[in-house]
Length: 361
Image 1 (tube, helix red, strand yellow):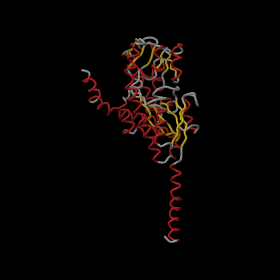
Image 2: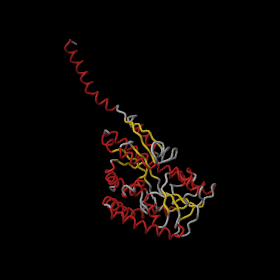
Image 3: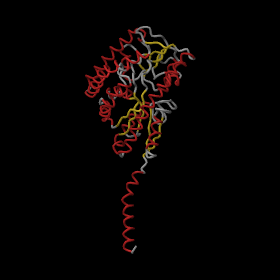
Image 4: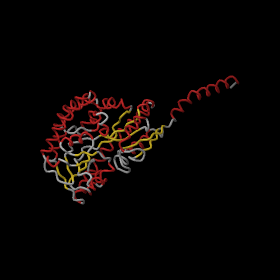
């Protein structure tokens, strides 16, 4: 090779390296984020373990090959339990893990993306979110707050809750002090319940000391982890208030908009995987936990009386319709949700519900 050819080859290599360098630098950029949560430290499903905020953070780290690092803070470690959404909105932290009904005081429409009393099970709810326009409405609802939402955990059907005294009729709700969040709290309040919204870590001591008479959290597996069976023995079912409760992760919009396309897909896929993992975890654990609560802790599993359910259903319809009249965004979400529910109910009746009846003989 003569001198000119050597110079040309060397120049070509140098030029190629110079062109590649910006791409290499971008690929190696590491994003370091903080994520607050509404959950107490160590709580399975929500804070640690499969389906949790920490599981999402770990999955994002692995899937991004270390390009996104997320430090997770339980409630009280960096912020109080219910301040994470505002912190993301204002840019104080990058992400928060919670449930959208915690922010229904900011916009009533937020309630629908978590769950709706007497709404749909996880099958219908997720069908609406993913293929009925729900996710697009969720993002539209949150746009004024400068955050982008992702479903990241589902508890399935929840229990009505723990009651120190048996509920025999609608009259027993009058003056009852109960921890219950979101729309269900407003509905109970219409029936004379004194509603308290407490973070998870404060439920047991409040119930044990008699500060509250009843409390709702999730279901057998997680409720037992909080020790609620040691503070009350009447455990009520129906799941009327939360038939499919969806946890969310919100991220600052400016951060989301600045992410390269491949990392956006990482975040989406990690949230989706965490979402499914959490649902399957609780479906696998709740039956055994319920058996243990009954056999070991002598818990009485009961169903709400018919007159209570009837009143709850009536008030739910009134509250939802009234809220939809007052706010255009809520009306838009409300109409979408219930139009989808009407169609899905017809299919569910002859598919899932029919199968469940026949499969039990």
